[in-house]
Amino acid sequence: MPKVLVAGVGNVLRGDDGFGIEVVRRLLSQGTPPGVEVMETGGGVGLVQKLLDGYDALIVVDAVQRGGAPGTVYLLEPQLPDTLPPPTDELDALLGHLCDTQLSRLFILAKALGVLPPKVLVVGCQTQCCDELGSGLTEPVLEAVEVALERVRAAINKLNGVRLLGTGAEGAEAVTSVRPNLQIKNERRR
Image: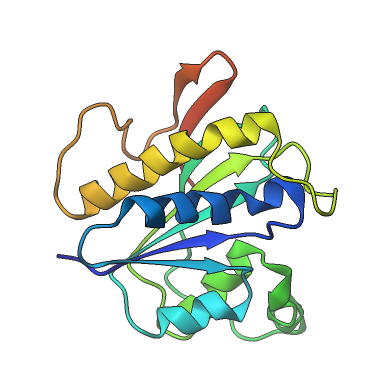
């Protein structure tokens, strides 16, 4: 059974930015299968430090800005190049601000350290508002929490070899209408 880390990324004090945290809290309250660890993180190097424990797969749950309708859930499979470019001022600047929580930066650092798992998935939700301090999730993002939770569970089951019907097209961009204003998109990014 693979060792899987599910990381909810976000800040519950910044509106929809707390999406990833809410999803993993619900996942924890419902229980997880053996071999699955769940963590909450504001991002930064804390996630990379946790990856030092060694995992076969990483599922990151986070708020995203992809231009879709608020509440749209995306399943992304980021692809990093096999080799990283040599250090440059630009790369140093990129890695110098890891507390900004840009997933691409975290993935680059984890890969450079040799701790990025071979399988990485991002379950993201298009936000509506991340600027109001102290506000909770907006309605469309709150509605998307259960959909994202289903996607995380389906990904865990797939990683564990459990085949489920209706989990979407692997590796292709597919849009499945879930509710009138809520969609799931599967994308593989290169």
